[in-house]
Length: 177
Ligand code: ADP
Image (cartoon, rainbow, N blue to C red; front, top):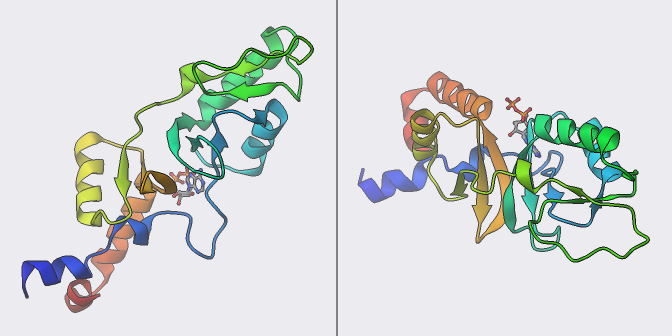
């Protein structure tokens, strides 16, 4: 078997990432345009440890990654201690924002909890390399993009499950599947 041939049969990041084609879609936040209520709803409706932040639902371009626990703490803090914050207050992850009009409630600024350089691979990255990156960098999750668009996420548990599946398969199917 030639090296090129072998490469073609390998599992790629796209085969392991979530969401699956049939499953629920990727839960993302937009860097602006969401309200406190909408972000709180996403936290209640999902159990994910974190959320990619994108420019907009339309372009899905990655801005950063925010951990669920940081989001929960920051929103609770804002509700408790930031004057004038209500359910319809805007949540902003962008660093510089347009000045708000005088009669809109104050925005909750969450730029400081955003990881601006989350680790990303492309859909074509072989899982062998992804596993190596997780090991060497001690990652908890890695984002998967295609042409700069956010497509999916692979967590440490997803990697472990994938490795267990591979170990259970017979050598022939690993080689040719
Ligand atoms: P873990 O994999 O440790 O349970 P999570 O609870 O964050 O961590 O993720 C559970 C599953 O959901 C994983 O398979 C993961 O790939 C997927 N997932 C994680 N974050 C998101 C998200 N924001 N949107 C959709 N799926 C996600």
